[in-house]
Amino acid sequence: MKLGDSLELLSGFSRFFVPGHKGKLFSHDATELDCTDDLYSSCGTIRNLESAVSEFYGSGFSCFSTTGNTLCIQSILRMAFLYGDLVVVPRNVHKSVVYAMALLNIRPLWVDVCPNRNAQVDEIIKKIASNPGAKGVFLTSPDYFGRMVDISSIRKSCELPILVDNAHGSHLIFFGMHPLDFGADFSADSAHKTLPVLTGGAWFHVGKKCAKKYGFEFEDLKQSEEVFASTSPSFLILESLENCTYWMKCNGKKEFNALRDRVLKLKKKFPEFFDENVDDPTRICINTNKIGYSRDEFIKHMLEFKIKHEFSTDSRAVLIPSPFNSQEDWERLESCFNNISPKKKIETVYEKSEKHEVKMSLHEAINSKTERIAVSKCMGRICAQVIFKCPPGVAHIVPGEVINPQDIKLVKDLGIKTLNVVKGSTTTLGYGTI
Image (cartoon, rainbow, N blue to C red):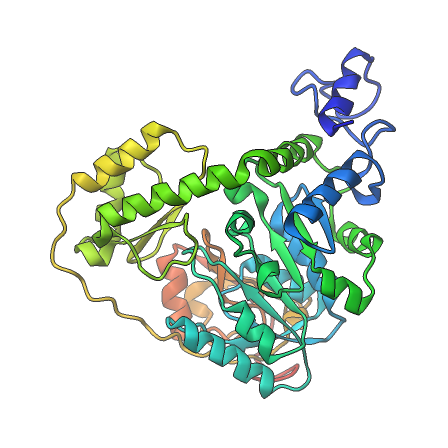
């Protein structure tokens, strides 16, 4: 029996169980009952669904999340590492990764992000080699721009567990480009971002070799998940994950191949608009500098054609299509490109980030006494929060780092008026600068 069928059985009953709307808002919104299975002790319908996803992705085990990829990230970090472990982490991680590491006292060995992806892999491998005490590697692949890390090269260089925040790559399984395909041990997939799933629907995977090597059982995944999860998972989201599972098996590959072809056709027709450094064959990343427009000018132009993009930086606008975009959506996008004339190219300038001095560990900083003060008074203080722009939610300053002049400018540009800093002086604590 499918989960949707189990939920439908409730329609004839008087509802003396939660939630309080008693099915009046959404009839399939229920709680854990004898006919619905329990997400965190799944042994029936939900367990069968998770097994189906595991089989589809070729994992050792897979688990569902109804509270997004954040829960998936927390779960795999807890499974892979112990309190105090050192982990190699490129700087472009999402804020949820930083806070999860802070809670678990996982100490990051930061790797600066390089515009050149080959150089980035070299830096990761060097960091691993120069830190024999490192217990693993945490990567973000693909990123918001559709750029992927060469996981295969990192896998060949080390035997350490490789964890991947694959929030934007659940669909890459259709192209043989999923992190598990390249040798990753753990992958956290935000299914709702690119697949037909309600917001908050996600799943995480443990690779077959990893499960065998470290002796993981399915119950280990559930226990790790339950540490952080809400005890009231949404059955509406679970049902959407169920429907997506069957859709992927029946129509997914065909639909995503068609989407890839459509995006490729658009790129061939309007090559001057697109960023070349994109690996995801379905991601649309528009380089506004290439066509001589500022970001704001191009966004205003898209709005005239009723197009809302996902997010933008100073020179790039990201659009995330799926097989469920309508013909009208694509016609609007093509009209948008047809009705703007490229001007002289604006040269891209990469501003090198100033290296942050670390005064406290993530764990120490978020568990210290703090105070909230005006940004203008934060220079030299120890940060006690993650500072980021969302989307994409990539951390610029993390807890335990000393706030520098570049940081002050950034937070002011973001319109932030106050920051949470560690109370008192900047006396050195913890493990020093990494």
